[in-house]
Length: 185
Image 1 (cartoon, one colour):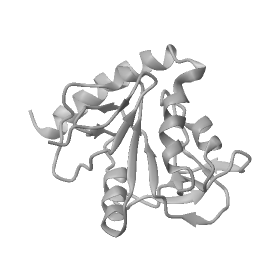
Image 2: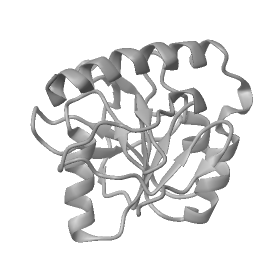
Image 3: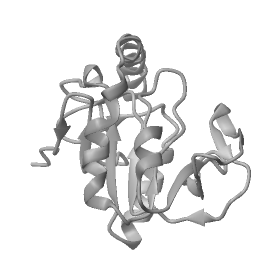
Image 4: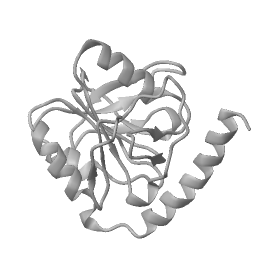
């Protein structure tokens, strides 16, 4: 089985686990994320607009004291850019149906809340397969210190995410149950 086939099978399984967790979600799912972001209070933050069964990070984004942005896909094979977002921003559909602010300045985040399908305790994540966050994190980390926080339901944890050399590790993983500092040994 090729790595692409292994990742495709892992994604299918992860979607099912995430869907079950989404159906059991509670209002307190973002409490630990808010606590984790408190250490980054004034730093520019990029979150995401939750789609389908992704865990909702919007309450934590809205509570952040600093500038907040959301990702904008510029095209296949490119890194993401981040447009400033506020809870009252007028949103329009972007690529893949993700909502983006209709207008607003571009920001360079120092902290990213990263969506995912699955994660492991080494800090690896399984995304949707476009490589957008890996390219983005690689580019941002080449210029400055950036903290990548994976946000997921605890049920999305797997023993080991299939990886390749371009995969970027997360600095922290936050679920509704715990905050995990990855073992990068």
